[in-house]
Image (cartoon, rainbow, N blue to C red; front, side, top):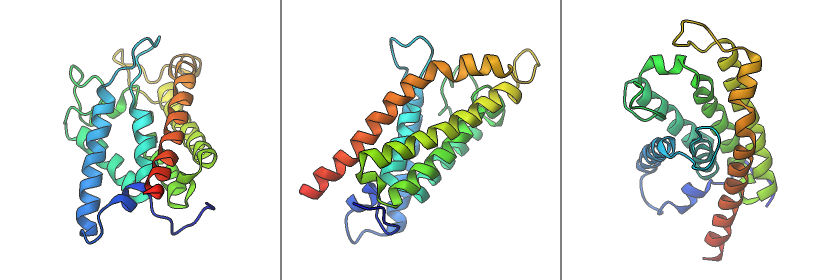
Length: 204
């Protein structure tokens, strides 16, 4: 299928006909925040650094929802954390709230909005039915997340010591390199899953 600006994302296409679209949007957005919160708590075992399934969850939601609903789900999720709900990784024991965004992961969290917008736009254009196109969109989106996360970690993060940022070398070594292979695998899984789901839907 060629990219088409009028293509419907998977979750929208699966929604029962005749149900109010506002209800659909509300349910999908809230469900998306639940998935994101759960994915933040799931630690991937046997990996040398702490890692969750959150990037995979954002990718899958964006590819399934389209840009508008995916961005809304991510923004609502961040708002939930900002008002103190324990939806982020390590909350508890860490305390959610506005100050959480000033920590080392703040750039990555904000980057999730860009990720949802990029992958969701690709889905809106029909790229969610092509493994290659969806994979390419997810790679581009992940690069944006890494750039934002790296920049904040290197120069903006507020550390417990009172320092600001850990410096570019440390940010690259600790915040980027250990996650490259894992993110590539998560992208591959998401890029395979959504087109496969479309194939099943179309056969039905």
